[in-house]
Length: 198
Ligand code: AMP
Image (cartoon, rainbow, N blue to C red; front, side, top):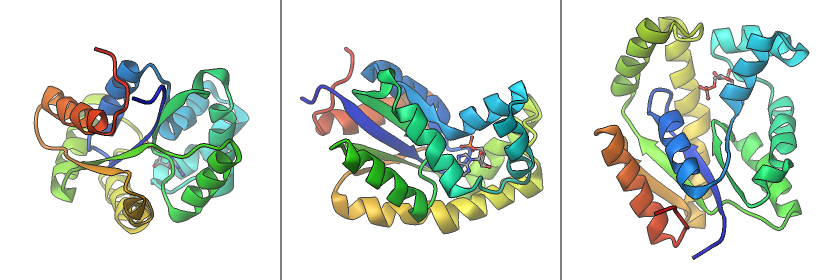
């Protein structure tokens, strides 16, 4: 059993990684660090960072790597992330993987597990369209959805080729009820000896 968990959850937009990430983090007693949430909160509050990234998010493009990595480094340096964290939405490309590796190595740390939520492109699009109708997120237009899924396929999915050989990737079938998927993730983490609340 380890006393901490340093986790990353990866999956296409609409895979349910936000919801599952919160559940896992609560069970492990670790904070969720979601770059999308950090950007959206800054946009809502009208901070200088928010003003800088509004147009980027609306188009579904990526915020520049160095800026994003700096925000994550700051967040991971806070006390509540000292013994573990769950990253959601970062790293999103190989440059960000390198930034994260360097930062964690500097603290003598590394990721314990990468949870891949496996959902097809068609399923993602259907779920995102439903979310667009329900929540009206400004980056859930048809065009931005397609663009974000393209970026996921071309830039984000390849990071698994870096993490795969490290033996830390757990591929989880993302089709099923919320509870079924949570159970699958918990089982995979428990198999790694990671501590979860009863
Ligand atoms: P998400 O909620 O993870 O889908 O992120 C929403 C948006 O925030 C993305 O479409 C990007 O514009 C931006 N974003 C989130 N995470 C990152 C990241 N790691 N690198 C660059 N841009 C990001």
